[in-house]
Length: 344
Picture 1 (tube, one colour):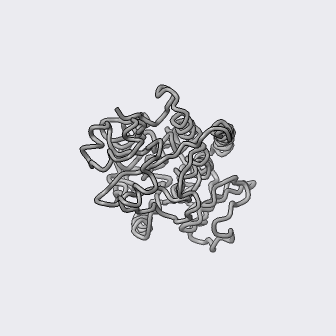
Picture 2 (cartoon, rainbow, N blue to C red):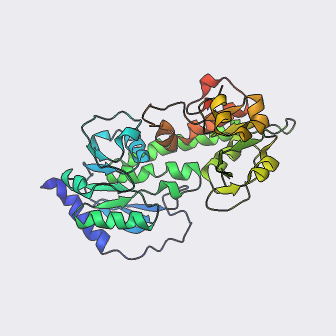
């Protein structure tokens, strides 16, 4: 019975909470970058507040049986050396991180099986809030007695803010101080890399493009997208740093050519080879980056099933993603790259 004590306390706190008072978009006390949560240590445990939707979780004892809806959550648990807590997951075929193999398959992440989550005896299901539909799914699962908490790192704009959500997983698993230590090391190395990516004033800037042509529309990162933060911190020139749109920017092929025809580097391409990229759309070959052979995707660490470590370790360790971009900008050897793969 002892295992269920923290969950009873969590559920009572969740039901009885009021709206949070943190200002929308502000960084709460205790955080350095993330705006979507707040953690308070007390004499009796740790209080975790998640803001969208608002939840207040009081953790008296570490949670030992967790289910995940996102592979990113697996990446956080792995970094914390807390994989023994992972007993159920959605889409296990998409998980790159090594797991035991006896975890319960919760089905598709867009509609996880409430019955299997109940069967797993979870202390909590780590959910994802992509919209109203997900909130309804969480409510349906909770009606069966499975507590859910939303891990919304994807709503953060900067890479360091996303990585800071490791503190929430640390608080839930009794490893908050370890999480703080991991994040502090990530931050220190990231900021050091920002200095390495600065281009001397005497050297011409390197221009970057991203995305692919999809049915006549080219989607590129806005200035609030975490990739744009990485581009800027790596020292690239990019035309949309000042655009504050929340979602990606849809461009026509004519607009894309106007902005990126002469871009030096193309990252995030959809193909696995230059030939495949040309076969996908002949327009891909119209860009200088393609013609110069400076095209990369984010698939260096992938499995045949489609699992990609870019979405696990990459989120936890944005300093390594930044290092990739700096090496690409400097045209350094491909062997130095963590997640990026050069197309040939």
